[in-house]
Image (cartoon, rainbow, N blue to C red):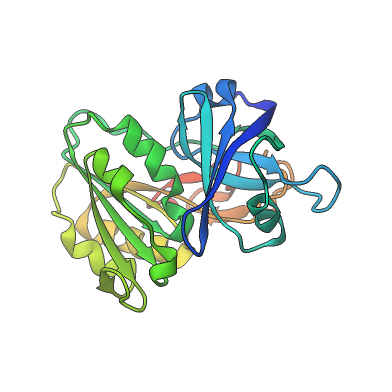
Length: 256
């Protein structure tokens, strides 16, 4: 799949809540190429520390701009959180395999996300805005600090349901508590992104109900091109790299 390396200018770096940031980059060529589920690899610093690029799912890509939704938890993402308007970043992308687009016959599309795993579903819902299927987002966060407004999803016709571990927002418990909102039908597709235990629960639910779907897997990535094999996971077809063979896999392909 074709990628480009470009210098992108920071348009805005907004703190969404106590945990998350929304970074907007000017990257016209990249914005035209991105597909839902793909990611970009960012060199967060001009020097050699940190040495490796950092991967971020694309949150939105339109009007010549690319947005990423991230949490400042590690050294790289904390450096990224300090970026100001007009700063520049070296960006490589788009990388990875995207989600499969649902056909016209699909009647229900369910996005299941945990934390920043919600990122690829914004750009996906932008593209699916005119799809006639019922669209739902089941979102799980640790607490109120890890939730945010679902207004943009709702503008795209997506019904949003929230669960938090402590019950501070929405239903108390894991995102699996929201599975009851899914009207099980033969023409339902599930798309998931988040921590492995969450995706394992989604895969189990889908298998029990005979539903098909895909998951975007999260792994530590160094090269982003499938060369170092550091992000390999076990699948029904042997070991595959998340950065190159994925990050999107069929729900029944990943072995947990």
